Picture 1 (cartoon, helix red, strand yellow):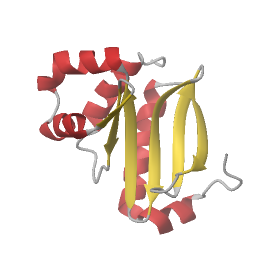
Picture 2 (picture 1 turned 90 degrees about the vertical axis):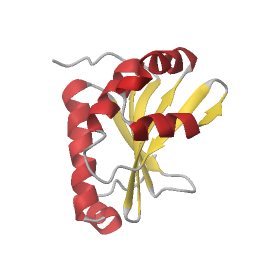
Picture 3 (picture 1 turned 90 degrees about the horizontal axis):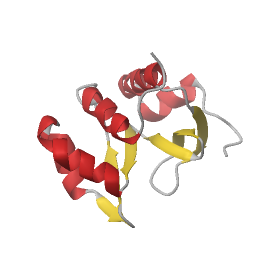
Picture 4 (picture 1 turned 120 degrees about the vertical axis):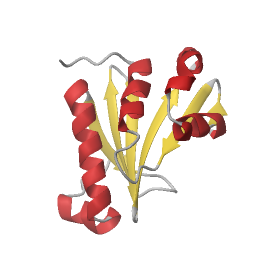
Length: 137
């Protein structure tokens, strides 16, 4: 856990205003559909911050921040990967490419996106639905 949760100004200084707006839009989209526990942490070697959405001990997704970059990670387990594969043609090319190139660990596919705009948000929400049905109306 982080001792200091970054404030708006620190996040803008880190990722830049345009990406901070993308970050906020993505969080708002997730918050609108999912009632989850949210936590800040250090981002490991590659990222400055991690912002994780979890419920009942299961992670839905995580957002990451580092200098001039934001990340969106979703991990698909074996069954979830099969569900994606069944419907893969309905996802955009970039999502399919990231799925194909994603590292697989113990049956899980770690898909990391670095959104520069909101164009992939519909696909992100569909990926989240594979993991968990939205629990907010």
